Amino acid sequence: MHYSELNFPENSVFLVTGGAGFIGSNLCEALLKMGFKVRCLDDLSTGKQKNADMFSDDPNYTFIKGDIKDLDTCMAACDGVDYVLHQAAWGSVPRSIEMPLFYCANNIQGTVNMLEAARQKNVKRFVYASSSSVYGDEPNLPKKEGVEGNLLSPYALTKQCDEEWAKQYTRHYGLETVGLRYFNVFGRRQDPDGAYAAVIPKFIKQLLGGEKPTINGDGRQSRDFTYIENVIEANLKACLAPKEATGEAYNIAYGGREYLIDIYYGLTKALNIDVEPEFGPDRPGDIKHSNADIGKARRLLGYDPQWDFNRGIEAAIEWYKENL
Image 1 (cartoon, helix red, strand yellow):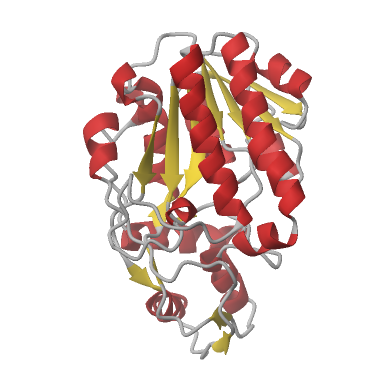
Image 2 (tube, rainbow, N blue to C red; image 1 turned 30 degrees about the horizontal axis):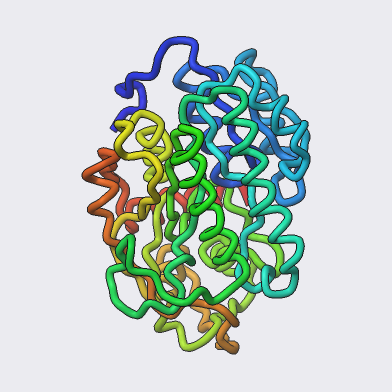
């Protein structure tokens, strides 16, 4: 679909928190291409300065270096804003197990600060990133909203709390909120570096660099890998969905299921590199299988993802070849 077909009011102003991150910078880019004014709020703790600087020549773009843990910063950032796309958070299940207090302060208090600022500044719609991790140990596939299990990490707990706070802000204060439970998003500008890097960019970088990648566990774990373009579509449609759709959270995925070992061999084939992987221990707090029912998002948000895994991975490989 062409985002230009979406009917936003003229002169709409968007705030993207975490706008120097992987998903946030792609949202900023899409909105600027549509001709809207975009503010990016990021403290650059996990976001990249180069992602913040990419759009600095665009007169519609403003970068605010600031921290969502500070309410005054959130208030200033929301002033005069129509739509908030709240992506700012620290990801990574294993890192959250090591740093529970920080995750609570950043992902929960930071989100409540943003909700409060959006309420006080009369923002029209507050769309925020949740996560498939809220399904915890619920064994049934596909994952369906309303059927969640026991949470397996502090990160998952922060996202569940964000959903509950957002519902309260819709119920009590009339702030229209929409939660997007992302399932393993991948694509251009996703960071391949560091101990907590996402698996697809990490494998691509290691293979291109002549390294031997390590797969955690046996490689039989499955994920609903979701290309970035689908996530951009979901955010924009969530801004425009009918009021009845607010106060809820939605699975955002393609609705497919890929096994890690198959992805690994698919990458080696696409890159024409013949390297067998190492196998390491399972990661604590990880879900074994994840696959989404996206029926609710289709019905209530009009979400209609166009990028399946194969189309997305081809585009991602091309991007990394040119940019690594």
